[in-house]
Image (tube, rainbow, N blue to C red; front, top):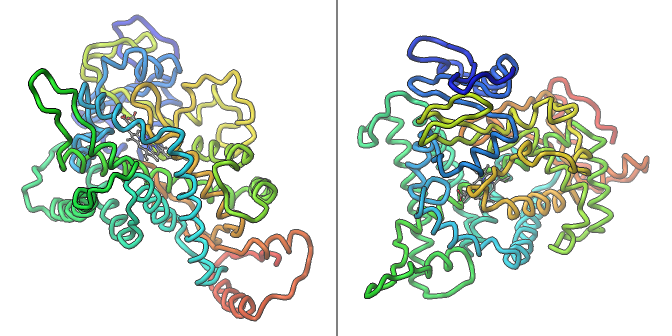
Length: 493
Ligand code: HEM
């Protein structure tokens, strides 16, 4: 659909009086947005209650909003929900305060730190593997839950040098409660004050209390120890404002530190856990891709745990992650709000309009991607000619994800480490249900069967091998379990 004169609003569904398309966005946002783009074109306007909501897809418009004219945009009103949890952390703060904090936090993600983070990531993954193997493989686990625990531990160790292994499960549950509340709060027309003791408010405040206690505990412990460990926590703790004449330099308060750490812990683990879960799902649905990535891992690592030096050679593994991030972008939508009126794709965008960039629809746009619904990691072998603003898993412009390189490295290390020894198989009858909340995550987790790679390799190479007594017992139990799963298929072992 072509642009018209610049006083015209973008086209889009009219929806119901007062509500606009609110009911549809509550029930199935992915479908509402994808259908809107198909029906109305690259720039489509929805009405959600009192708000105009414009979705942009032209790379030049995406660039304009995130980079060229970013000063005219703040984060949208919908970030208010998550702000209840994250306060004035990097993700939700604005203006000169955000700029200062970003400058302070940036060095913690510097290349030289990433090298040491790689060892921590590798070690934590190794420990997860050992735990799985101790309990015996050929077992069904919730891969999403496992990845949440792992990435949570990694972010705690790399950014605050604290091992949160014991807190992982409780924190994960509290985060899920808090995120759901943040999302519902953003979507609700009437925002009840938090002091009202509604069941939802009580649940949220309890979850937030548990999260605050853990984060403040980390800060107080570090203050008490007086240690100067070179991590993000110390960097932020020792950061000072440039003092004015006659003033003392100011340090961040515990509450400011809490906001920054909570943001990093949240932004830094749930997204990566979701990306890894979607990757395992896609590999299980595409055995030819799984075989190729496993072959690369075998060749590059020859059985040992990965280090930073291996990363460049894990090329195909990297494309698999890129492609999983294309099809299932954990940050599936991000939004801004126009301060002054703007013009996008030739249409008038009034002040106050929410403008959204939606990797979910952008990454499946047939004008930018051949076979957009297909899983084809090879397409990332040659990115030449692709506009950077058509692939946005980490956003763009000055508010681009600060943990971009961290996350890509972590996903590669975790994936390669695990695929060395484990083959992930989807439990027959399982379908992937999506929960498009603040992030895109698998609804209700993702049960998968973990198989020892040596079994799978032996069967592929046609070698009949004698199972160990322990494997025999495990295999018998598994066979019994399999008989109870409807629609199962033989695995050809
Ligand atoms: C696959 C994993 C990840 C994905 C898909 C992802 C995606 C994103 C996106 C799209 C944004 C921009 C949001 C916007 O413009 O409104 C963002 C911002 C951010 N991300 Fe990530 N992220 C990931 C991992 C991480 C990690 C590992 C960390 C930290 C360790 C992190 C920390 C942050 C922070 C602090 C911001 C706010 C930056 C700012 O506004 O200055 N993220 N992320």
